[in-house]
Length: 341
Image (tube, rainbow, N blue to C red; front, side, top):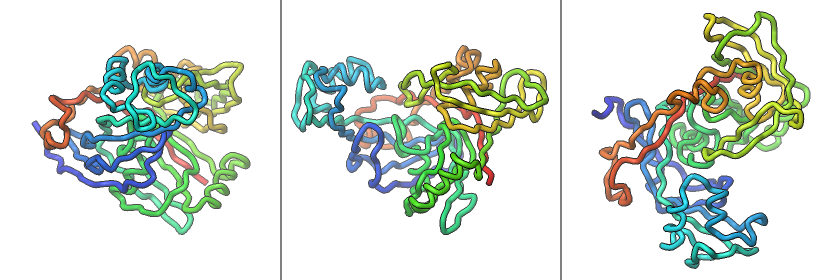
């Protein structure tokens, strides 16, 4: 049964669509049309073209091997078929799976894309001046287009739903699963000034609220364990751990309330390492209650919600490759964040 929530539809400009993969042509897609269904936000499936120059570490490797090791969102069978039928090309020419990549080669991959659904929550402008824009970021979307997320990213949604056309400069970021305030500068010079204040003299401070498993002492708990990055995961997340060979890191935790099983804590990071708060809480033996990466007990149960794309919400002619619904996953938020100056 379809949700009674009214559908929300909007489109995004085709400009500024680059991510870590390379240049991306979205002229053949359906302009990021979205709909709300059962409390989740879906973007209609669309064709998407990725283009990237061969990196130095790929030179001398078979094209199939590069896709299997660098882009692990699809399996070997898919990439073999995509290369054979010309969806993956080199210098606009069809090659075979054994083609050895060379310096100067340019790879193009045209694929049919289903973005994972997000929670049906929209960003909101909290404050706006001539120099800054402060946004309340919802959970389940990244700040920038990356990996499997394109239209369902904060900057895309600011353009689409809030009609913010001016260029915004990032001063800091929040993890995809984290909700909270995020600050953007309206010019590069002011962005650098804010960044320096944030990093060097702590004129601007930020803190997070998290619900953790277990309890912490009433007094402040300071963790100064170094953190190192482990690996890139399929979902474009990074995983990290406390390790003597890592980079220096410092987080202070203060207990706000507890029921014995779970505790609300205020988290104040003094450095900005990958997943710093989540890693330090895991080190204390009190991981965030619903953290799908660092809470082993949460990973042991069903940490994701399987969602079928509601096939009735779009015309099959717009999605000719979909014989049925596509399975996507949604993960719940782990922390919320606030900033203060």
